[in-house]
Amino acid sequence: MADKNFPLSGWSSAAIHAGHEQDPNSSHITPIYATSTFVFDTAEEGMERFASLDKEKVYSRWGNPTFKECEQKIAALEAFGLSDENGQPLELKALLHASGQAAMATLFFSTLKAGDKVLSHHSLYGGTYELLHKVLANSGIEPIIEDLHDLEKAEEWLQKDDSIKLIHIETPANPTIRCVDIEALTQIAKRYGKLVSVDNTFATPYLQQPFAYGVDFVFHSTTKFLNGHGSAIGGVLIGKDIHFMKTTAWKWHALLGGNANPFDAYLLTQGIKTLELRMERHCHNAMEVAQFLDGHPNIEHVNYTGLHQHPDYYISAKQMRHPGPMMSFELKGGLEAGKQFINRLKMCTRAVSLGTVDTLLSHPASMSHAGLSRENRLLFGITDGLIRMSVGIENVQDIIADLDQALRG
Ligand SMILES: *Cc1c(COP(=O)(O)O)cnc(C)c1O
Image (spheres, rainbow, N blue to C red):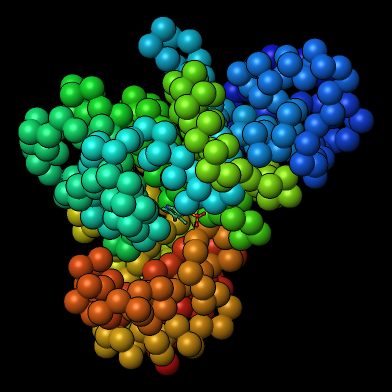
């Protein structure tokens, strides 16, 4: 059997090999363990597995070998190259979920109880915003939404309200790709003994590693770049307090029933293996596309942190390897121009979501946010002619040609 202690010095080596265990039936790829339950040879073996903190091979709502590879891979990537306080390689524990929303529910419910508050910021992912304002608020947990670019305001909140237990940040965030300073906010939070969680979905661990700044939790909707092919919904919660992750967080995840399924976990594992290659191409394409769009006569402005005029250009440059594949832009001509542009696209895909190999574009005002009043939409930064784009890994000249013909009409 292979020596699993072989040091993995490169990012893709870790993405490909970390978390993999030799299958007992010599299958090269970890099989899809499509089973609800696991067999005990003896009562004693059953007892042992129930008693173990790892809860392996008991029941698939609790854990499953196909999930395990994926969880270990994601934990290894978020920890890649990082050390703990003692200078040892950082150890993290990931819990795979059925969706990003399920992982987010585990995060909030395992860290907060009635009477507690969570401090977060504007431009959160819609599902997170609703979870905070509908589900959590209904359970006596109050969300506070502040502009967390303002570090003094953030500190003021922590000073005056001791019931804030968690700061949840999402960076970069929709729709204008705003970023907040993970390091600065974590330093403030830690002065007041607060937990910090980061939604790292847009960046992926390849572009940004929040644990480098001492955060407690990282969250991903694995539906996006980690899977990369748009073939499954999924979410993951990663934590550095291993005991907490294996007890309280694991318990909430099992009790809320947000477990992943083996087929989706298998797809996710295969997707992650090519994450570095895909991200390099996504990022390279995005920079070229942003430069093409910037200054185009039919475009009001481009929101991309790789362009100097973006308000968070420096924050993004400080904490991300590259500005990434996500951008948005405002068309001259408002709602009608937005619809017409979207309808004229030929190669690029009209869809919500992000992080797939193909370029996805959406027009939030007529699609995801059409149900909101214009006034409410504008509060979320969803202006009439705003187009959101997740730049894919097609050959960039074809992406630009498609955008060009759709812009010209
Ligand atoms: C998609 C997404 C989520 C929610 O994840 P699902 O997999 O759709 O449940 C949360 N945060 C961000 C930033 C997302 O893009």
